[in-house]
Image (cartoon, rainbow, N blue to C red; front, side, top):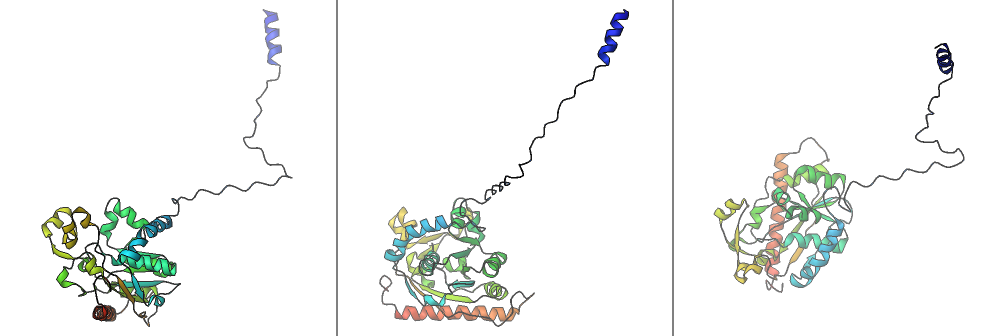
Length: 302
């Protein structure tokens, strides 16, 4: 018993061993350079910008649409040099046809001839439509909201295209062709003033005849939640006629830029001045349309 206690005491007197703590990351050698950290991946997908526009998609659209633009519609411009090659500007045009031919023609022509992207401002309806909304955004469509327009024009110095008639223009029947509807409350003028950019009016002839509306079916439009449901002359050619326009020749005339002698970013602008400027621009486009129609010899050959 005594020996066991002596042996235990001797063992207890032995020093205990502790585990070594190894650092998780060894510091670099002083003579070796510290490697640069790898850049984080871009959270955006491909070349899609803040608005959802993709240059790859636009390039594809241009290739597909160009034969229609040049051979089907035979688009012809007048005064294209009045559109600035740099800086922001608000393009304003008349709008017509059940499926309007004017919007893609304007965007395509400017991008091809001037090499500048054009963002088309349109009703929120397009954004909420499945599949169509995404494709529309990739092709350069933006919801027509004052904040969006301001960012495009003032902050990003881009070209933005707007149709002040809205669906009132595209829903016109054939017997109402080339009679411009009211340009809303002139919101496009206030945006141009606030952004400090010119307005470039554009008159388009030919879109009215590309897909003329014979009459509308309000009950069908209400059932499907559409702004209007048109019955067009193209539908006489069957299902394909629902989407394919007639080969009416498109003529586009760019009018002199409209500038405003007011400072940008003011808290408010004269409502009467805005309405007067809006009506003056509408009247200029209307007179240009009448002049172009007087000179036109044929719907199909210009």
